[in-house]
Length: 202
Length: 202
Image (cartoon, helix red, strand yellow):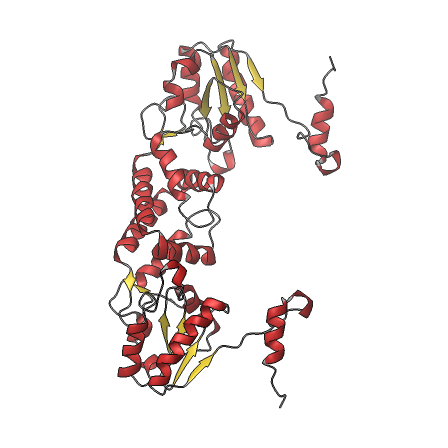
């Protein structure tokens, strides 16, 4: 489609489509809305976004996103006192687990999983740093909270290999039929896992 | 919910929700995606967005959004040669009509409609500028392309009052049953209008 607007407005609409899930129509609506009603908020978003892209890096200890050297969770003595480390693939996984309000320890973010075909090996997902932490800190439990799947399994294998060297107790979150999910909606693999991992009723 | 992340990242997620249709979860996904994969594009968006909020104003002639004094459509001699002016409520309406590739004249953007209860009168929607153009330029036809509704009617009434003074031919886009729409899905008012405005078949 030919340019409909002035160059800068066209550019704004094009660049808003950088955002995940935003197509041309949505971008256009967002641009007009900002220009018509929310210029100050739009300017503030521009500033925060620019600063975030420049300043947010990875926490030196857990690799979660932060603009500080050590993120608030790693900096908390209260959390360290639990001596538990939960290993996840992405920062959104941290957010999801924090949302449960059931885990009070620390995290380690892999930012992916081992995938030789994409050139992602142990170094890329931070396993040297993880091993350093295993050797220097005393974790009573390390919980693997990876997405199920073959890549997750390879990654778990690498991590359990390291944990074994340091005699750390390693656990994995449970996989199975989601709560409130009817059995007929669950895929066969999930159902197999949930059968295999069945528990005695107390 | 308590702050989950570092202050800057929290701020980014909060400010992304300024964008229309973006809630907390979407904002979080957008932020993580940008940080993980699209930092350069994110920085570019920040820059363009900031510049847009500062520099995009209204075209001196048609009030459409532009960073230039006169927008590309008003600046085009080819479009002026049609001596047609289409009056719309919003810049998105201009985009929609341009999308049809059926109109080759110029536009005038009201940025709303008359609404005494909101303090929006003829001045707020630019009618003095419109009258100035009616008096200085030679339009063979002025097309009203307002959203149907009572506010649109009041606004149309004001505009037709001015147009009459200058002896300008005034038309309105047709309202009726949408093409491809089954009659059973159309509301009663639309159906009434489409009956009242029925045309002879040639």
